Image (cartoon, rainbow, N blue to C red; front, side):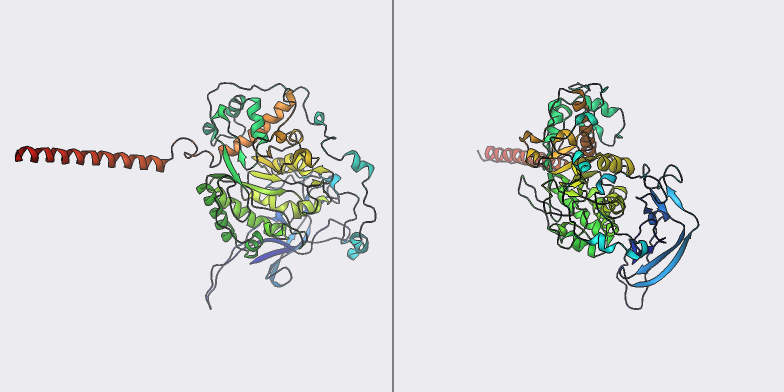
Length: 518
């Protein structure tokens, strides 16, 4: 059952697609002559469009415009089975000046990525797509404007002082407060107890935790944290350290093509169970990017060309895996919709309308509905800023608007090779871990004698440790002898005692018979 809506469009007004998937459901097997009921619900605010150009809301906002909304049941995006109409009597503008934030948001959404629109003509429905020829023409000028160049991020242009508090106080390090990571399970993120635990970390331990986040989390002796394993593989889990592999499943595109939330949840549960059985704490998946073109090199990892379908299926996979305490790093955040040149400071230009309604939507749904509390950032740039150190993306949208509480990791960390990846910028702008191998210090923060650097490191470690404290990293397998091993030990002891007693009786009987024969 595919449910779509068609919002009212006013010529020259807020841009909208004429047909929008909003949700879907699936029956069990229906025998011939039988019936089945499927209930699909959604909130009115789910039909709001993002007004990035300020037609109704200066500075951008989600807007549910007044008018007739056609709600249609379809077999696909073109074929209508039945429809109903819903009337919205007056505009609802989801900003602080009017009707407040959407109920699913933690903070009001507003324009944050104007700089990423670039010098591009975007297709408009105005006057029947009258700018079609201009919007679809190949670019004639591939050079950057002076404004874009002035703000272009790379290792040589990053200025830490823009993000550092000059009045910051050097945090306590190396304290002996007697807390362990086990003590922090289910402790709220903003609980003062976290300060006591973080005070125990040394600067070296913080740097290890941040800089060696590739397929593992570093061991931290001061808080009793063992080294933990993380694995890649959107379709299968393979432990890089042991070579052990789990079951390989069909590609994500096939999972989405089933339109089955139940099946997606079961796949997530299976991935989670395999991770747990293989002592894997983090899974670099599922992948949430969009099939922007049918020729993209990673489409097999991504669900579909639709943000809602991708988000609903992804959220079910995440929630299924989380039942086993697995950290799901939904990836690649964000706009990683081209493999070509993505490691070469590829600038991706788009407007905020498309970002919020298409490209960010799968991540948003997976955070809000799936409970994702880990994210892998992308190689590419959003406009002229690397996605892995984009504060608008990682702080304002992810943590501020969506209410994400957890940790982020970069994509494979190449350090100076790529010219843009540096831990110093990432930890100041919403990044936490560098996906770098143990013993390779290119992922380490520098200038660790400076207060602002240590503050940033501590904040990243807070995010990393909070996520670990609420994962399967905190189990008896990693802390002491597992229960099943203790049971075997107990059985061994019982067997040994029984054998000893029987041997004693046997010896006594032998001696008794020998004495009587003499």
